[in-house]
Picture (cartoon, rainbow, N blue to C red):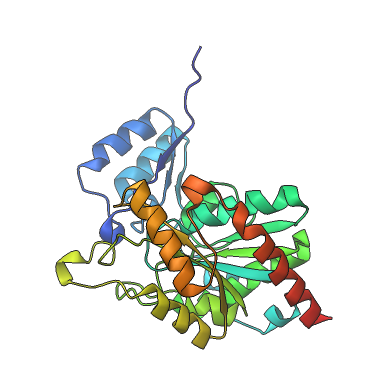
Length: 289
């Protein structure tokens, strides 16, 4: 027989982080059936009196993953990042919703069976939901504490899990005008290696097509990463908007232009990246010795 569910997860991502008002009827029904709610929205459902009272009456919880931590639980950047022993690679993207976390997960699952102790730092609510041990929710953190919370997550990971490699999940894109992210990861986490996720058939930034906000050229993005002090180790491709043949042709041309490995994680996996990751880890450890 089927077991009654105990959790209702709101996993949609809506612009502005607000649910439509008519969703209250569904949420009340969930709570009245004694099912707790986990919400990934910016809107704090636990602070809506109608829902809060229904949760209390039925003995269940409303858990807002994006509820900011109390100030006394947040960390300022301290410089402890320079004591981290593990090599660090940031999986950054040209844009949001482009596959950064998925690629980071593929690389984690590639490295562990090969004897490379690997951990991923989540920076979004989905990583928390997927059960990663180390991280924080970037866009639910007061701006003054983003660098410190990032540093704290990496330092804690290094001390508690003793990995050879720490992968840091990127957010949005370095130059996405609605949320430019990535510089904090490179600078505050002292990252020297980047794997860049790119969607070659996406012309405009996600949801900014009506503003004619064009995506930058991938070569320019790699140069910007270099100016921040990090090396792009490889480019990984999101296949949306193109055929398999178009993607294969683009991958070959881009690899020749950049003189870098370029892979399509969903179609090919990430095995081709393993020797480059091993070399980077070795270089990083040699520099620390």
